[in-house]
Length: 317
Image (cartoon, rainbow, N blue to C red; front, side, top):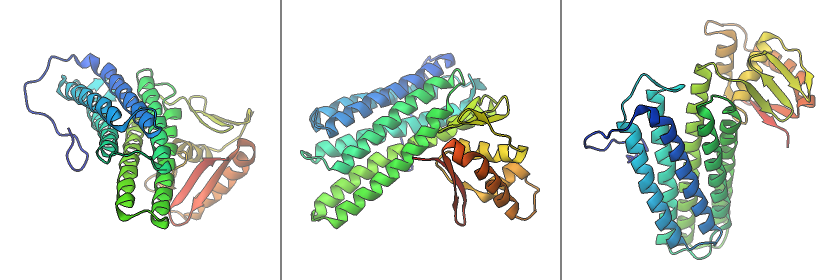
């Protein structure tokens, strides 16, 4: 279903008679199939089922996912499918297929290597994949109603961050221990394959957020005790309304939308001050400083400067 770059490749053959109105249901079914595969993989990594049994189940689920993806691609393509454009649905389908492919590839490696003792890092990565699959299912399920999508997409961003951390730690442990070259390469390959699925989940989160923003359907964004009501244009921290200027509100909006991710200075300046802004970039730093004073202590969040790049908002641990 996918080429070497992970993009979708259509299958030759006559189009099937799939009603385009079924596309939301098919996307949800695809997300459910991914969850089933992730659960089976986690069970294998925890030793609750054998790797060969898990691979067989996941292979069947991957075949099912291929059939769903084919139906999504071959269905008639109206201008829009619910809130999403036909192009967005195609992008979602391709990335969903990539997630399932990555889970199947990891299961295959476990079975073909006849793994008996699972490396702790692989087990941890399997849990990240399972949590990502669950959040993915919730986000896709909320898309039709266009409410509460962002809590799940932001969770996917944070899970992708965690996946990166687990992979880095795994590689460090593998190369600093006494494992032989074969063991190092085997577990590095398995962990990288699992981490790739979290990357694709984040790609899906980006598409879903774009759909919601373009539809003007954002309602509330939350980070710890900070709550932004988009429609009311109001921000509260620990239940107390925080007075913000329009620029501060727009800055916080961008940072909340990309919770846990760095937003580049150029993006902040362009989106908040406009494409034609040529003023001093210290203006941005000044507004960020004001924003910190208003929301950090009471809201339980931290706005971190990433040198040479931009700013990131994180919930405090």
